[in-house]
Image (cartoon, rainbow, N blue to C red):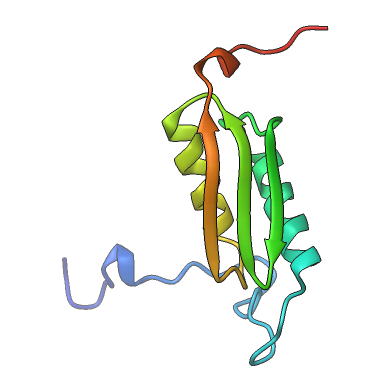
Length: 107
């Protein structure tokens, strides 16, 4: 690559809402209720994760995931989603894998 063209990893993708989107005030404390809501929203929006049997609770910034999922990869994905939420200090993943849960419930 020529010196005038930056490496692809060096190019910062700017948000359509501006370069400072997601940057709050210094030491901005997010409430446990807010963290819980965001984690639940992100789990719900994850198209490859069936979150119907996942319970989420938050205590002093620590997210606790409990319930069951249908695979080890789903267990890891749920943990990674929770870890990606701002103000989460730790994720305790108590999810259990239930291979029988792998089908969609039809009612």
